[in-house]
Amino acid sequence: VNAQGATIQLPAVFPRFNAQEGEAVVRRKFAVPPSWIGNDLVITLGSIDDFDETFWNGQSLGKTDINTPNFWSHERVYRVPASLVKGENWLAVRVFDNFASGGFNGPASSMKIAPANRSRDWYHPDYRNDFKLGDDPFRYSQW
Image 1 (cartoon, rainbow, N blue to C red):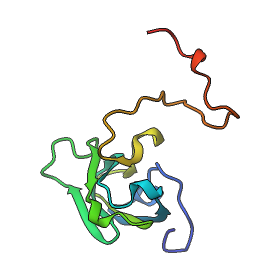
Image 2 (cartoon, one colour):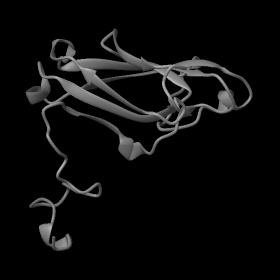
Image 3 (tube, helix red, strand yellow):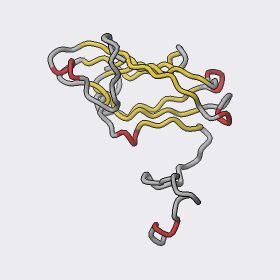
Image 4 (cartoon, rainbow, N blue to C red):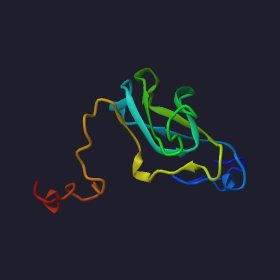
């Protein structure tokens, strides 16, 4: 929700950053599955142009600033400590644009929250779970 109360769909380049530099804060309230509560999580946000500081339930998870090489295209990956993971959570990202356009530049598929102990995402990005009996494994090629 912006200052005027409008929502923004992410990822997106923020239109105001085309004409001027500045900062914006985006935030969202959401619930996590009960099995995630009290466990470390990893959040990925894709690339953010230019700088960011990311917060979970009011606590800073980390930031990317001018000291990060290629900060405008650097993929943001932050660990969420188990002590901060509740049923209902707030995620807030302060974005600061320093030059030209700015905002969330990565594809939507790069924005994820998952348990930190997940060793690997075994599913193809177009995995669907809306089939009555689950995804059709025969549509994948042999390996």
